Length: 312
Ligand SMILES: NC(=O)c1ccc[n+]([C@@H]2O[C@H](COP(=O)([O-])OP(=O)(O)OC[C@H]3O[C@@H](n4cnc5c(N)ncnc54)[C@H](OP(=O)(O)O)[C@@H]3O)[C@@H](O)[C@H]2O)c1
Image 1 (cartoon, rainbow, N blue to C red):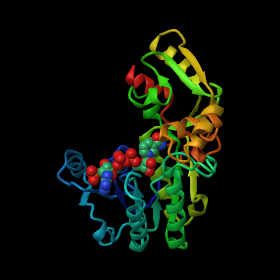
Image 2: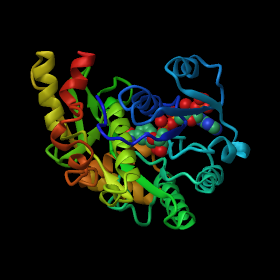
Image 3: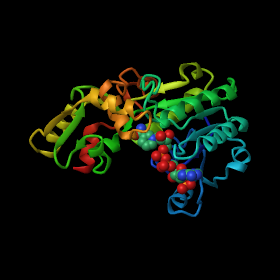
């Protein structure tokens, strides 16, 4: 696959060995290498096996030291931040400030989840999204148009929906063939494969850097590899695995909302995600998929069926 433009840019991935970062860095180093001849992967441990594997693929592997990050980003056009939200807000703010100071042209914030503009937890905001909102606002204020600051909202990772560890916690118990939803099982929600997030980031960077297309890239971009529902996942599981259609259990959405309200932001992250799905806040049917991958001519988005087949 090629991004089929003449763009040649340098890109850095902060947190490039992580759950999402590894996929993004891999896509940049392989499918989008023509557009990004220099891929700088930041890690606390350049000697780790993942870091070494990236070096073998031609990455510039650099030790992450926030104090010297500005220098380490010299000459970098695009920065993709995939550091975790477990870092303190202060540290994450410092990273954002440093990226802006570095003079990067395009900066992807560490978002890659719910579109928190529509996920309305007013009065019981979870620190995950409250922090992301504050940091995004601060960073955009610092950037003042000099750096294009982009938030990509891609909803739940497709790999998490199907995973034997996290899937059941989100109500997708493929092993037991039981699907537990809050609210209607037909409620649509988005889910995106991690490599597809990487491809979308690469394409958005290319589009944002090219003066003829930069205006087409919004500051906040929704992508959706697949739009599905608990019922769809149940049906696909039955088809792919050759098992009877599994049980759908419907839990009380209003009770979940009430419980999270009463916990005033201290409720579990996964419960918030389940509430968001039940409320329809994770339905990213209106999205920029056609902008980043017109008619799926650049790649085929990974589907729920693809992911279930991998584990079948
Ligand atoms: N939509 C979803 O379903 C979903 C799921 C998970 C995450 N996300 C979002 O995706 C973004 C990235 O999250 P992630 O789960 O991919 O991150 P992660 O894997 O937890 O961390 C990414 C990398 O950051 C580095 N790192 C970890 N702790 C650090 C620390 N204290 N100081 C400096 N570096 C540290 C590690 O690299 P080294 O060890 O190599 O330094 C790690 O591999 C976040 O914004 C998160 O909210 C979305």
